[in-house]
Length: 380
Image (cartoon, rainbow, N blue to C red):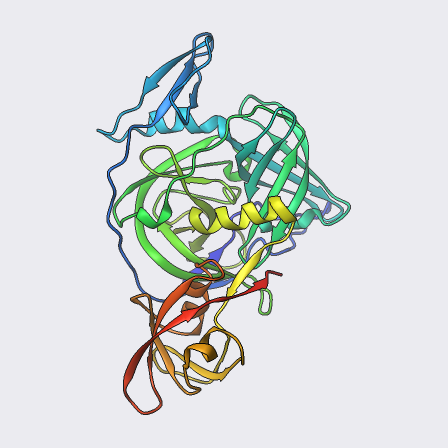
């Protein structure tokens, strides 16, 4: 049976126990190829160990409070234990309760002040709350706090929450563009409500185009594929590199079964943090977010390799670059394009205003590469 991708948030249930789907167990497709990047040399991660509790906290500059001792986790042997100790306090459990039932997910603390903090998670984790449900965040120490939604982006499957709790440990961001296939990674989240669960694995593939959601409301992800075990409830949790920096938002898994929720089979998918960080910053700043626009309509009847352009939108990037109708997109910035889904996913991995190289087979039969400046539109 072909694999299905599922968002791995615990399914909502009615009080009668009858399972219902609210976008949490969604079919998806996988397409396209793999691209690699050069692994950079990285400085050692800095952390502070609490002198009383022995808990370890990330320190961006290596400076610790008087009650904590500075430690260097080093750049040598990869230590899951060290990464988990440093980052676990920055990862939270999220519980959503509404008239439809309840469900759990995960999130990461990405910003804090003296009075409040921001938490990054998946949109499908919190969308079930609607306008009348409640969202509760549980921290690593067991404390809880009500949360409100700052903004949501269904297209990228991301959301930002706010809690009125300040001075929380903020997760460090890595650079997802620097990942290479085979790099070690750690996943932290709350699968099946089990808070602070840590698993490890490697980056299995990069630029893996996947979609989740129902037709007409799909989320598109230029995903990091990993074999680190991630399960229902891990949605919105952190994927970390060997230095304990967040490089992805865990968002979907593949399963060989259909119907009810199943566990990990070593095929997990994460939203690259470079993509997620842009969306999160926009949601915090304005409550809305943007997506890049190529300015084309694809021929859905085309069955060949690539994405055939049925129409171009006047005034948008493709038209301004001179790409003619009938062209078939074969690569974007050197990444091979298998079909229209791969094209959409790849384009949405960029920020609006980016200049990309689009290689097409022209209607004349020749190949040509165009420089296209991507437009901008509000995400829905």
